[in-house]
Length: 140
Image (cartoon, rainbow, N blue to C red; front, side, top):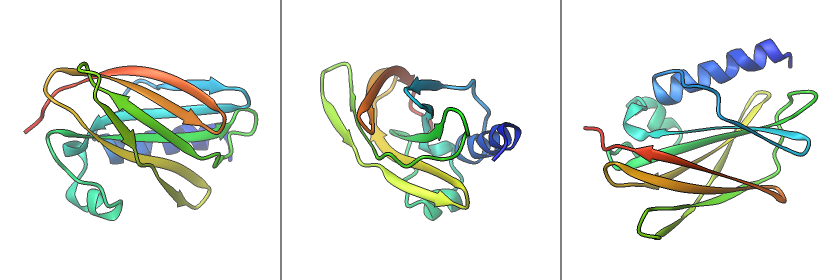
């Protein structure tokens, strides 16, 4: 898969899942490029939510993670786990489902949040880990 094809694929997936194109969020972990996006589930169309067994709700988010080989940019499936912590220290374990469509493979998980809440994500990809924070707002 060429890099141009990959970039186009990421843009299409971002459009499908979030309704908008956001700045790239990427971590490099050893030989992998890990692309991730967390967004409000209400930005999903009802048909996409149903297709991926995701719940649309103003207080639910979706985390999308794709793991690629850093050199070839081919999809990797190392296994992904993680958790989310809210400002009160309450922990939610993320239950990822792996989705494979043609040459693409990615992981999806849902999480809950309250209005104007900054969540701390800890993501385990294979034997490696990365963390990020993101603020979420309730949408109608």
